[in-house]
Length: 133
Image (tube, rainbow, N blue to C red; front, side, top):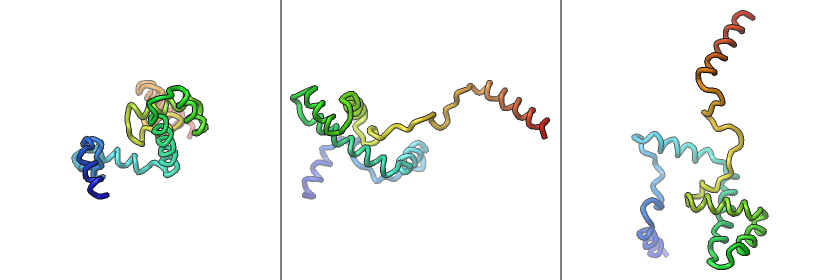
């Protein structure tokens, strides 16, 4: 068994090999990515694993096409369009994180206003609050 695993690891391209999971202190993006992965809930990991199981089931059969996808979509209790989206995400980035549920709402750090307008609003509010007290 161990010999089979060793052979599989040698055949696996280096970008898919599991690293020692330690981020380099020289690479702040790697540390940030590691922190992001640690923030993912167990429920989200389970959802992604479930999705991956159905994606692999759909891609396992080379024949059947849309009928096969429809069958897998029924088993997953989702529409065929949702299954196609999962497959597309998997084909773009074959990692478990590609199948994570998307977080709703505005992303952290995104602003609806540009900095100039935001500064104007902030100065008006500061001025108004200073006169109010």
